[in-house]
Image (cartoon, rainbow, N blue to C red; front, side, top):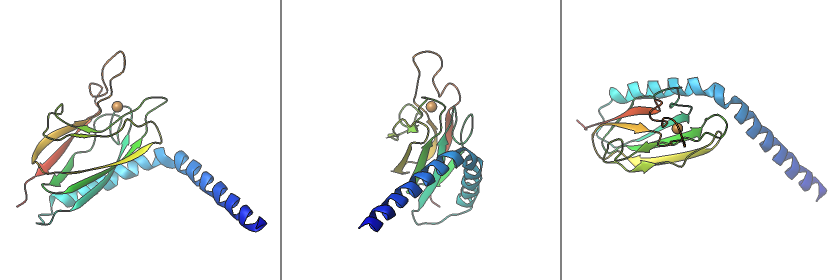
Amino acid sequence: MKNSVIAALVTVVALGGLGFYMLLTTPQQSPQTTTVTTQMQTATISQTTQTARRISLTLYLNDYGYNASKGGPRITVYVGDVVSIRLIGNGSGPIVHDFTLDEGSPSPYSVKSERLRKGQEQVIEFVANREGVYTYYCSVKGFAGPSHRERGQEGTIEILPRT
Ligand SMILES: [Cu+2]
């Protein structure tokens, strides 16, 4: 009985430590993630498969860019692909960011994440069912000054027809 309580406590402490460790290491992971995303995009471009696929990528929501301090990676997929994006809030202080792909892009999509603070995460998924080249962006705008998009927080998503 006593042993199981101790075991449970040890587990909690270990998990807490892990969370703290991940929090500390998160900023250092950012450049690595960018590289992985780029490699995946290259692979995507050279691939002409007929089968719809699931494309998974990670974006850090920085001030004021995606995986960068400005702009974001060009995401290339094919019509019908399921795009799964893991969003990780990485703004400074109380600054929140989101991922938006909607009529304001402009685009025929209606994709919008929660506004995430540093350390908060959300996985968003959508089917890339309309081809074209669109802009994804952060829809956050403070009470004063330029919006995040005006500060450069936007990137391009290209949805290619299947061959
Ligand atoms: Cu933002």
